Length: 82
Image (cartoon, helix red, strand yellow):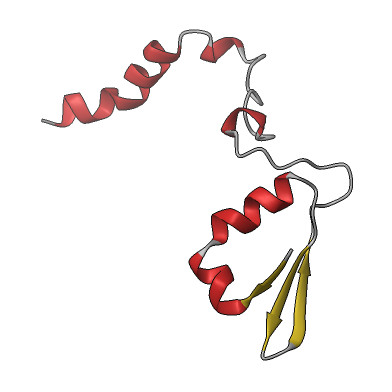
């Protein structure tokens, strides 16, 4: 997919969809190629937060098994301050 700098700014979602299809996006300004956008090797962009590497990084922590209780404990100092 070839796209001008202005079109890229106006239609970024189209460029992201092209990357999702594993296409190369070439950015052209005044007839000169300025950038080639591609996904890193082995990566697939799917815009899902669930696939973020940080999701589940504390899944094995026992102190966070009760998330609402942990949040209450963190906020406890605010309740006492009033």
